[in-house]
Image (cartoon, rainbow, N blue to C red; front, side, top):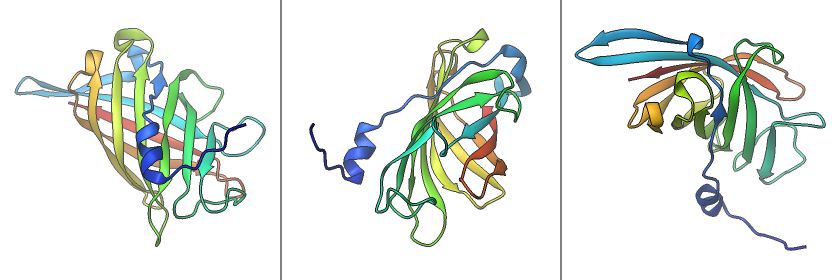
Length: 182
């Protein structure tokens, strides 16, 4: 069995990730239209599960792999379900695949890398790339959309992320995403 020694820059280069999601057209709405610019709003919930026998998020690097909370330098890879409602058993609209790295020595701040790939409806096969700083303890976090493909080719916009709930014992969380595309 081979042993690998990974450092953070190498991991950052290796983990080019894709967030797959099914997004029915009924979940999208056009907000404004001015100067031939349309803003589209998408809404869903991300379920980040670190605990149990089938977690959707796994710590792959860090100083203390057995710790129950994140600390500076930890890297977590995730393949989280996205649902229409906060209930994990509600309609699955996709998967959030990516990674986050704990980047602050002073507070719980993450660097997020997430790609959204839509698999159904009018956005079938289209993708969005989201990268940004996540100050987890803020009520609302904002991430830039840095590009897209298919229906979202050249897209810009932003994601507003709010914590819906977190289990303090496990760190498992449900997060509400509002995506605004221009």
